[in-house]
Length: 116
Image 1: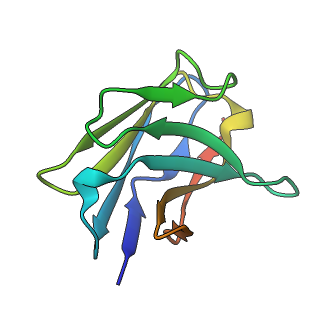
Image 2 (image 1 turned 30 degrees about the horizontal axis):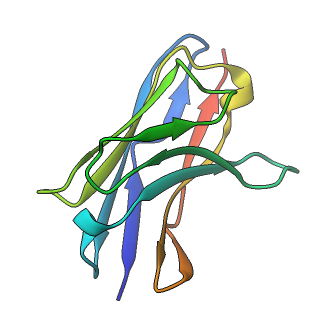
């Protein structure tokens, strides 16, 4: 059974940093691209970052390019999202995601709030 468990969210001031983690289980983590999505209140869920199975290629939404960094540790079945220079508009629930057997799998999400 695929499980994705996010952690690391919280309240941070504008300009601050957070690192999110997502621990995966139930599938061969090292073989799959992993994604980070976010959903702000009243908005659709949007793709924030992707990282390929070996971690060699990453892609980012324009809104976070240069501020967020995705990485992974395949030995620990964990994917990370380092978020720097946070802005109030980054406030959202952040979700870890992968597509396994053609189905999108989600974690429960972790809340990130950027506010002074």
